[in-house]
Image 1: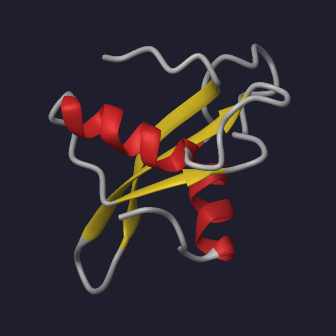
Image 2 (image 1 turned 90 degrees about the vertical axis):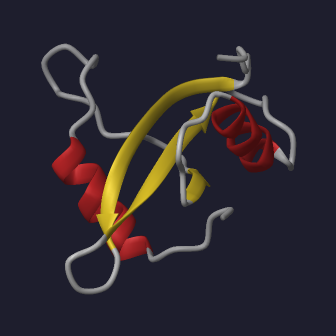
Length: 91
């Protein structure tokens, strides 16, 4: 996959969309003061180039990581955070 140097952390997950279906969402954070205004499109194009299905790409401020090692994504918290935020990413 194309290396995007501005990406700090990233996660890929499913979010409920309608009854019994999910949409694939990629979220990412950027390194301090990095990333263009088109960063979401750059990530979407990099995923598509690798054949990775993604319905929405979102740049967020922080991805919740496990408090002990700060290495694993806390998907339950991330999913809740995204659902509360609503959608608005790149399709």
